[in-house]
Picture 1 (cartoon, rainbow, N blue to C red):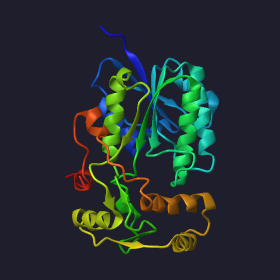
Picture 2 (cartoon, rainbow, N blue to C red):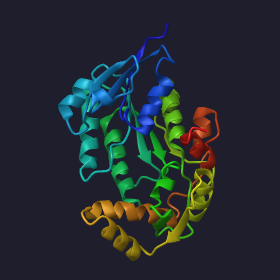
Picture 3 (tube, one colour):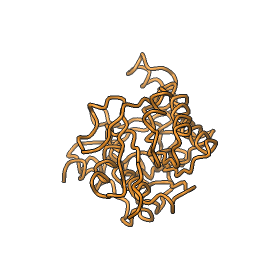
Length: 287
């Protein structure tokens, strides 16, 4: 019988990490799951090992990761110090003796990425490369099931996206890819998968098609960059500049084509085509 591997999963209280736990819990006797959460009481209720862990706390990271073979590191929520949090956790994983790490990055992550948070992901990828751990990077596009949430109370999605296209991916597909890699990581060593949906859509198309599924009148209104900064500043006067820039650059990254690449990575890894916008929203609605 194959030796049982200990697999640690972070982000278990969120959409992606929680779905990975659902896909793997009890499904593969070769895997001994270890769930990591800042608040263990909120972790999924499965028969497995749950440990407290905070990305910014090096000591708790080392303690939680000792004995782990493979780690799924779901990126932390956006924060001014996220780069530091991620680097601290990567260092803790290496010190704890983690053999391989699977990281949820962002499509086109680069030092000069238009989407400013993509620069954070590039920095984390660099830290993982430097750590010496075997690694697989999942570069997720924007999320199909999140795009409709950009609409305001009047059903308007506003931003400087123009006629640019976005190959957004379902969070469930990202989780399915992560679960497949965790089940059998060796074939994916050193890979960086650009995860997209099956098509690249304009924000006008997103609004119109999502509205039909959700039964809402959604529409997209293009803004200039200056108008976008002003509207966000007015709506969120206490938000720091880095956060406003992240929100605005979500749209400028769509406008300049940074997020338009459609790939077959979801199907190659999972054996199933990536979900469409309609399939994603139907699933979200429980259809």
